[in-house]
Length: 191
Length: 274
Image (cartoon, rainbow over all chains, first blue to last red; front, side, top):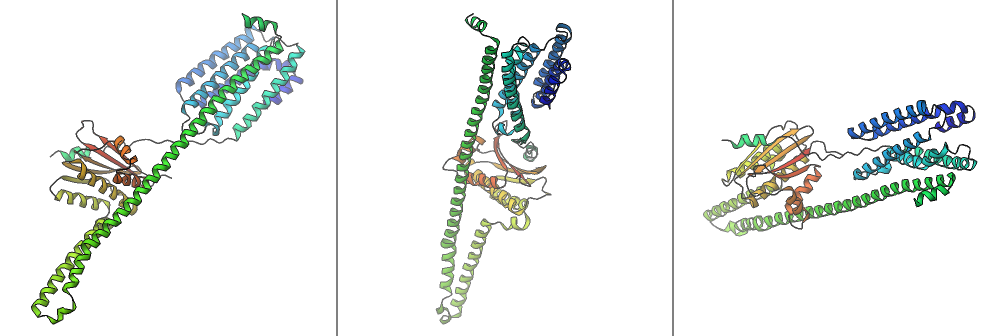
């Protein structure tokens, strides 16, 4: 749907699309931050992501409305967004690397989503970073279309795999009995 | 500087391609590390599973061996004790008895009756050692208390058992297995620990029933239990473990914080988890 809308605005309402792109970046980062808040279990990490989200959104708004005044594409903001998502993804994979002792991470849908985000944002990082400065460069535009389309296809395939995955919860109960059986023993021993 | 010069001489398209390529390599490297780590984890888990299977096999062999030993013991008891007794009784009741005088006949009959009575007691003892009638008729609580009373009655050791919450009893099969485990533990304590007292407490919480045996003798800890259970010796301990496995329960060997007595806790789920 994202891709269809993007093509629609690009061809039919290019001027509206120009205004929508900054909003899209903020919305995209907000959704992805929310996704990472959901998948991380540590409250401390959740708080850090919330702070990062707030800082990024503030920065993006200042960049669009004050510094750029909606005149150019938000290449720099997209670059920062990509870096942050890549960092979140690597951190998530690192956490899984440490904890995935009793289950297969391939069978979790979070893994496939994160892998998709990592590949997509790593692959499109440079093209988005340089797109504004090469807006009229024909050769660059060709490369942009090829790379962007390729990574979009990869992203969509991996997202499809992620949707097909079912989460299998793993329960490890190693709790020892906490019932106090010694009380009676102590009572029994006292003459 | 060198890299900056190189990048300066390149056009945007080449920089984009090289940059994208580099980023992709980085992403793929991260994923590869993760996949390789997962494979290693799986290999480790497979090894663990294999070890677990070997352990199961060992327990099964121990169980079979124990059964064979038990059969041999019963066979020896019947052959060495009941056999000669009945043979002697038969000697008293031979055909020549009718040709003898009444006094001798009475004497022979009395002796034969005595021997048959002894044989009955002997066979009853063998039968009781196989399945205590108290357990069959009155359940685990009565059988355990009976066992502890008999130990206490010997005067060698102070033994007591107390059941707190036995309103919801385990099923017959579970009770028999728990009784065998308690019997084995108590036998071990009597044989090896030189304890002055043994005390058993039962309680229930949620879906589980707990039994704890305290004794002040020389006991073992969980690590020693695991070691002995894996070793070639310790048939009794292997049997305890295999019975606990059948019950899908747990057993913990501990020492109290003051190091004055040992604790063995058995946790049995009423309805075993799937």
